[in-house]
Image 1 (cartoon, helix red, strand yellow):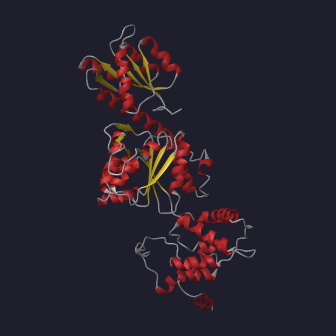
Image 2 (tube, one colour; image 1 turned 30 degrees about the vertical axis):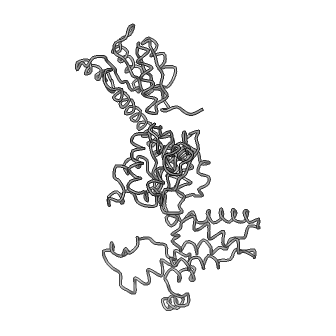
Image 3 (cartoon, rainbow, N blue to C red; image 1 turned 90 degrees about the vertical axis):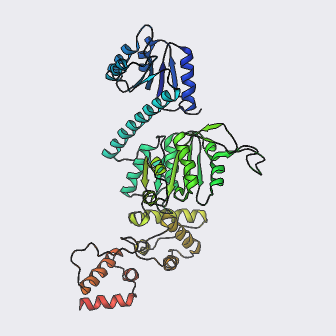
Length: 467
């Protein structure tokens, strides 16, 4: 059974059955289907006590209990419920009185139904934000991961990453987009899958890599088409949005989307509906949208290469997955995990890990992050013949990449630019040697690699310093 939206009920109270039917249809077109109706104002308080109601559409002119009297009683007994007052007359004094009694909005019933729907959508979003804020506040005070099994595919003991998991748990049920930023290979799709699992949505997670898609292919991929929409469209095709109904639509590499496609995505998120190519019948977006990119979207929208309005639509919930070089404490667990996985997939006995392996890999920046580490270990296990895993394939991979040092500054940045008093050349070299030895646990071979000199040259320098 498909879940209803929102998670709390919308109660429409009016003694006119025709109006109740009309408002249910109007809200349904806007994607709100958790709607209850009530024709007798005397039953409202009992309904509030029996089930979770978030928003009430309340007619003022009703028999038995008037709308104003009921508004006052709801405010006293159920202050958390949002009330939108509906009246057949546009009276300023009445509107002011209702607002003082706690009404969220005052709408004239003869106004366009879009005004009523927009008011309900604002109220729903406000309640969702309140819930998310409470959830986030509790996570800040106690940043624990309540469902670690959802993140089982991500091997870590890094506190920063665990805090990200806690945040993802807090926003998993939100209908708003989630933006995941991070370098290639850090596990952005794994986080998206965890968020989908935690969301409780009954539909599937549908992943689409949008990098390189031109505008026409992007539209057809997401929206689908009807028969005869274009030359060669002999059969209708469901788009990925429809495939992800009641689930999650994951758009990877969103930062590479063309300008025209950005406009289409913006309209989808703003309106909550779309048209299959060749069709004039709108369809509702019934999936939660998660996007990922290896770009810094804030910088791209500042440069003008990514639409600012789309960026702010996407960044309601936002995380940055740290690169492996920022979580070097995870190297050990990741090495063990991938060794077990590789040996099992190749039906080999798991090799022993040389104690120097973690030290060697700790000197490397891993531009390909966790994905690159896994590839290194799979390659090493495939070549493995003896009891202890050889370091040679790792050395070759690092030398081939030509990027040994773990970068603490960005490309081209001067690490001394923030130092007020510069050390002398002699002292600078000595400090550099000491840091290289510290990072490698005293291993001169690996320290020499970090410094870009031979092991014998480093040995001579150390001997000279001691004499």
